[in-house]
Picture 1 (cartoon, rainbow, N blue to C red):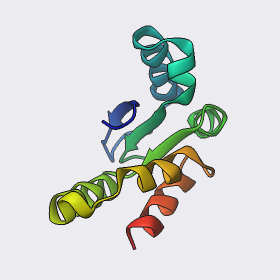
Picture 2 (picture 1 turned 60 degrees about the horizontal axis):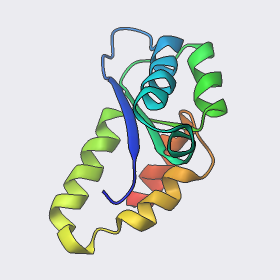
Picture 3 (picture 1 turned 45 degrees about the vertical axis):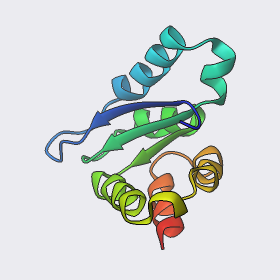
Picture 4 (picture 1 turned 180 degrees about the vertical axis):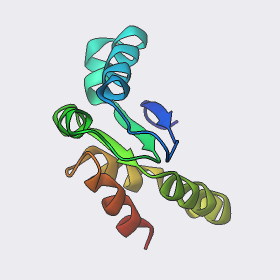
Length: 113
């Protein structure tokens, strides 16, 4: 709530994150949501390891935000500490706009200050 999110966690730092991760987001999103809902939902991959060239391209093409585990932790801590003052609608604006892929991590870090 208040919007749909499709996510996948590949938080290992020891392995490269392959294109199957982005493919899985697409497949699971389309399996569980109507196509229109999927196209409009927020897509997030939590990745601790390096991305392959293929997953970089797919994440940008499919508007997938690739965030580091530390960034997700900061988001959760901000939500917990701010409670009602944490603006999920404002966050949505950041998650729905470019850049996507690995550059999304810096975008969200900037949002968090």
